[in-house]
Length: 303
Picture (cartoon, rainbow, N blue to C red):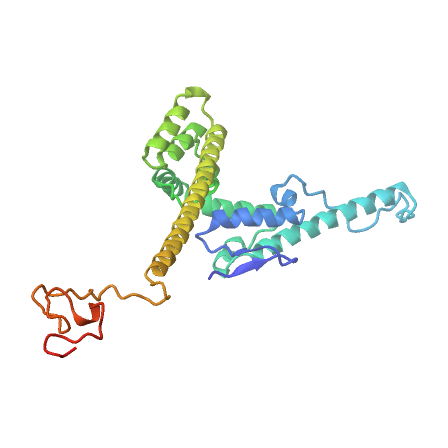
């Protein structure tokens, strides 16, 4: 894992600048500087005040003005303003310097202000590599495909981020190209084809914000439908399982005789052979256990 830099509050952490992650680093670094009220120093919007004379002002007689005089108060205010700006500028430089790996620090070794440091890094990582970077940005723009496991808002943010980097690299890219790239990233299916056709029918009225809102809305609705469908399937499966369990219990109880004993259906009832003689009466067609009067003896005197 790449080394990271943490804020004083311990809530901000991101990888240090290593030569290949400038875009992510610059976004995180900008946020860190803004949180510390240092970003206007870096951009030059809070300009560097003129450095005052280090010595207090004197009058025509070469005597110091008294602290209550206007001249002394003006000098003191200018001195404090310059020191305040210088402290903020040094804080911004120190924060950026600590967020770089040693291989990157040599590129800004002789800079004197935070603005100069930021501009030097931007020129090194953007301007000099602009042509190569733009080529791969366009490749990612039109090669990206939507993964069903990805939230639609995150998928659109990926294209917006590429759009930002292409513009930042000095290339002009109209929103309509990003719109087509997003639509081309969607899968070929009957539902998505209808949605894309409805959007493309708007023609010149089609905007990036409109497409983003429409796709996010459709995706959220589809997710809701899937949740409802899965819930219904689960409830139906539970009902079938309960029904099967109940039916199985009823079948098992039906297999018992009147005395509550289980009946083995594998045992077949005995069938009287047609030519068998009864030992009791000597007639055919039944056995002794079935004879009405079991105490009567047979024809040979044997029961």
